Length: 259
Length: 358
Ligand SMILES: Nc1ncnc2c1ncn2[C@@H]1O[C@H](COP(=O)(O)OP(=O)(O)OP(=O)(O)O)[C@@H](O)[C@H]1O
Ligand SMILES: [Mg+2]
Image 1 (tube, chains in turn brown, blue):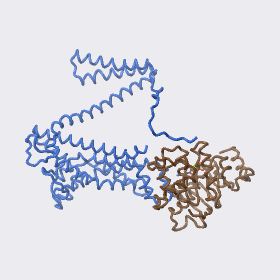
Image 2 (cartoon, protein in one colour):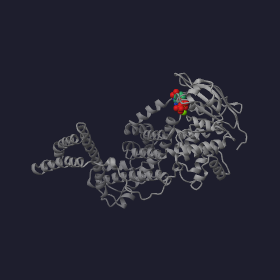
Image 3 (cartoon, chains in turn cyan, brown):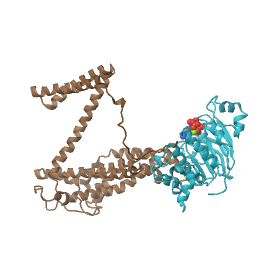
Image 4 (cartoon, chains in turn blue, red):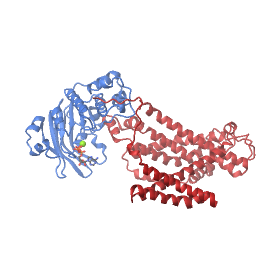
């Protein structure tokens, strides 16, 4: 794994779906080795935004995009940048656990290597380190050749995290990774995030205010009002966003008054 | 704590299904409703000497409908009328289809079984006259011919069908609408027209004489719509999350397709191929026009006429002798058996991996 971690930043990101403008002028910077939480009411564009960070957004047929996303100073939307290379550096964990159903646990961990056409001589070692980093090694070490779908939902989600980690990404994007999990599994995933944080830049979308406070160094609050495109209302250190928000709407939201 | 799914089957207490429990009143009236009409109908047949089919339609069905409606009302009140009628209609029509299908299969099996013997399966038709007794000659050449002709079309059609389905599901191509319409039109193409087309193009024009490969060509447009549409459906059923998961790991689109989407759709694709083969294995008209028929075993798709099961069946029916018609039934049964073997082996092939991993 590379020891360097990249800083990621979004500059004037605008997003359209067909004619509809859903994100307007988003400017966010994600410092190396920190966790950033994205919060905001449903439909304000958090998932859409996070998908622009590893060029998954463009897979939607009607998608439109404007602005820059800098990864280690280089615009990932620049001319000649291969989206496949971007996704190798910027991993993603989805809301719903999505292990590959036709593969075993071990094959799932190594699937990224196979899928990107790479070979790794130390497969077994990589499987173990990845599963350990995703805090699921102890639960699956004796059943690595079982089908991935024989795991519980929470285990599946951590397997998906392990699968991303095996690729050695510099940035990990997580879109509501715990929304389908029970409190116990949620806690495990949060612990995993905190363990990973010193080594990589993490961006996490969450609807859980406590979770944001537990894991995130900084927090961005997105809002889309009355059909206007979503935008960032407040962005800063997590404590400040939750304790002394500048904008009254942030205050209302984090205290559960709307959304 | 963590949840581990236990994969070994263990003795469980017999599962109860409270929702499936029926009240005694319901059971009684349902029994009543099924026995009385049947009894009355039987009585009529016995006493008045009515024809069975006539009694079934003129007496049993109306009585059954009335009885069902009455039971419906007594159990559920007014909304029960419709419910009762629906139940009768469903049972009646499904048993109708079932009987129809069963009788077709039964007539083939009972008539064909008499013809089937090792010599019928393994020998060819050389030196055999329409009236020759069934001890001599058989459909060996036709079985091989059918397998070769259909096998060759399958080899061409499956990649084509797969490519079409991939174009329709995985890409954002602009001509999807046209391709879909074309496929639909192709599905409606009468097989004889397909045969005629190939005949005119290759045989009447003197490019070749009757040959196996022209038959394979004529079957392709008949098979393609089935293979492409069923494959398309099964690819569509693969959840988008899996594809996105693969792409997010840095997979090029084609690898994501080959390593994730395709394996997930595997059993559907096997079914597609199978339905395609089943669609054409009994096709007669296009083969009569292109491969014609041969009595000798011909394993060369590229030269000479070739026998096949449907053309054999067709020819021997046309002779009209008792012996020859028996041979036709035999050929029909062989076709059914081949289709059955294909279905079973494909089910097994597509099922093993998933089962082993469940
Ligand atoms: N594939 C799409 N096509 C068209 N519009 C879309 C698509 N995906 C999202 N949108 C629209 O973009 C806006 C932002 O959606 P997005 O999924 O990013 O919201 P979100 O903040 O992630 O919400 P949630 O918290 O419910 O997940 C919504 O108004 C949504 O309707
Ligand atoms: Mg979302």
